[in-house]
Length: 290
Image (cartoon, rainbow, N blue to C red):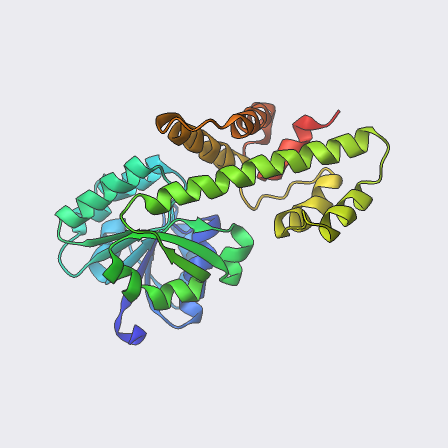
C-alpha cells in the first residue's frame, strides 16, 4: 500500500511546492530538499521531513520526484556532489518532472539505471494553479513498472498521466505542447493588441472567443488580466521562451518547418529583452501593444 512507500521530493519551487503539498494531503510519507532550505519549512509544518542534500532524499525514499527549473539545474542536482546519482542504488527510483530537452533526460536516465535504480521522466503540462489543485497532466516515459508503481502519487498530484514509451518521449511531447501554447499565446496577444488599436472593446473580444470554436481554458484564464496590462506569473516568460527554443531545435534536427513557432519565439525574446523574463508568458502582449 501507499503507506509502506516513502516518497521524496526535490525542488520546492512554483510547481514543486503544490505538488509536494498534495502528496502530504494524501498522507504520503515524504522527505524533501530544496536549494534554499526556507522553501521546505511549509512542508515540514505539513509533516514532511527536510534533509540536507538531494542524495539524502534518495537514501531516505523509495520513489523520489524532482521538479527543477531547467536542464542545467536538473543536471546539477543529478550529478553534483551530494546529488541523486551518487546515492542511487537497487530498490531506488527517480521520477524527474522537470521540463528538459531529451538529451538531458536520457543522460540522467542512463546514469540512474547504471547505478542500479529505475528512471521515469514525467514532465508536466500545467502551471502553478494546477500544481496546487492537483490537476496536472504527467507526460511519462521510461520504466513502465515504475510508472505503474508511482500511480498513487501521480494521481495525488495530477488528473491524468500518459505513458509514452521509452525515455525521451515525455520530453518531446512536452516541447510539442508548450510550442503550441506559446504560438497560441502570441496569436491571442496580437488579437488583443489589434482590438485595442482599432477602438474595439477587448471584453467583447474575449466574450466572442469564449463562445465560439476558439474557446479554451487558457484564453479564459489569461484574457481578463492581459486586457488590463497585468501579467501575474503562473508560467514565467523565460521558461516559455526556453521551451520554444528547445522545440525549434528539435524541429531543426528533424527538418520540420515551424515558421509560426519561430515568429512566436522572436516575440518572447523581445519581451525578455524588455525586462519581462520573470513575468508571466502572457506578458508577450506588452511588447506587441501599439
